[in-house]
Amino acid sequence: MASIAPPASAAATRTEVWRGAYSCAQGLTGLTLTLLIQPGGETAGLFEFYAVGANPRVPKGCFDMMGMMDRNHHLTLAPGAWRRHPTGYVTVGLTGDEVDAKRLVGTIAGPGCSTFALVRQTMPGQPSACASVSV
Image: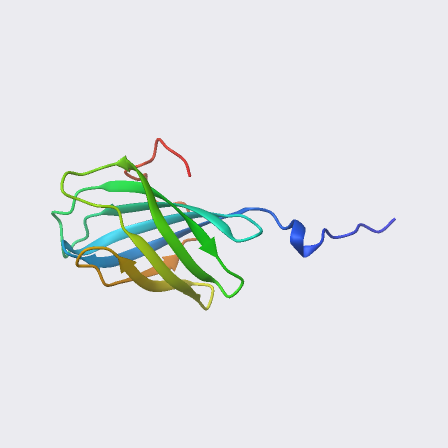
């Protein structure tokens, strides 16, 4: 008997990890964005920020995000609760578009913020500021 593939609507939830940087009032900042995307596009995220070589004084921090990834790979996320909150920092939202399945680019909605650029990760990365918590 031949096996039958599940319909597209029965697609599994997927996890994606994106890494790169963004710019806000504190300057260039490292960003790892972990997304848990449901088949209908509902998306939970973990926004992790940290220092980069060009801006070594940025503290580590992270917070939850919620939003949608539509069929055209347009992502909209609103900030949620802090998991690790450095003094003086606020949560931010973001909107962006997946480009060629390897890059995610867009804008950060927050005080003094502008753009972000991320690259899809295929290998596990370094332990994060939120290593003890999951999306």
